[in-house]
Length: 240
Image (cartoon, rainbow, N blue to C red; front, side, top):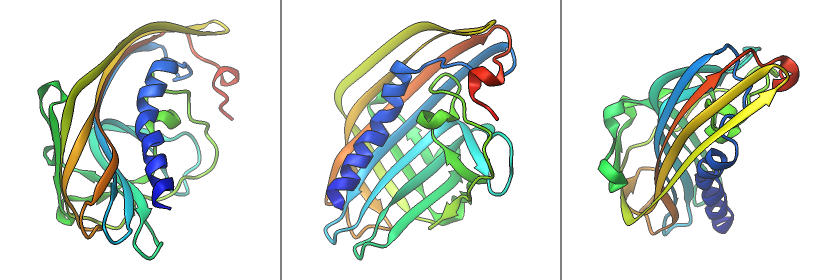
């Protein structure tokens, strides 16, 4: 199970970078205009010596939620900082959480040299609904649109105390792009880039006895400017 979580963490953590490269400006984000989106995040797959494992992500930028029981499209809000995690305790019981936290709880050094998350339950406010990830269509320019289907889930979960520091391995990967999406009469050129670095991680999380290993940890930043000319129709976006 721990190996499976580690692999899931790797795929989830890499998802932003892959989608940023392959699916920027997928189009279909509605009204014509110029949109500037930036995002900073750190993530880690964490295991403890008792057999518990979690994948944790902290993200500052525009956030997209699907509120519980509310039909229609997801709601984008922010910019704000969101802490989310999922995994299993030593007995195999599931763990999850999604909380809006103060911006000051998450700091990133220039050049992605390091990042720190320091937060406790008194600073955590349950997410207003199911968090839609950037890779799942929750960010302008990072993936395709989110369909309007059904009502969403809830946020919240288990509040945690965490003091975690990511330290870059010194190798920063940069990616820049320009591209244009077209559908029917609408057009959406975009330009931007990303930086990411693999990192070591140390510290403590209240859900874990200790941090005995971290098979994946990363710090990343993304920036995207997208111009929408014309209105992408429902046929282009897949909206119902």
